[in-house]
Image (cartoon, rainbow, N blue to C red):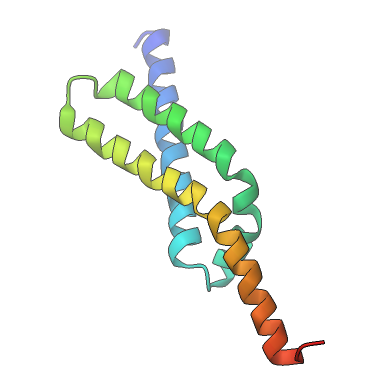
Length: 114
């Protein structure tokens, strides 16, 4: 194997790893928020979600460019995964005001109005 081909495989491996890891984090954040791991992710995920999505978008473009430029179905799968991670990355921001309001309501119900 040539050095260029080895570097290409390493880059593709890192891109797949990036998409897989951030996809797993997004699934844990969205669907397992009540677990201990979900709580830990929920503390840090909103702060790093935009950066993660930029990495995922870049990885998706690299994967499509190097592997699936002529394969329509595979391009749609990669684009769908990236779109899912994008939706998971923007969900924390509109949800925050509702979470704050819910926390205030719980405090009022527990401690009463002052």
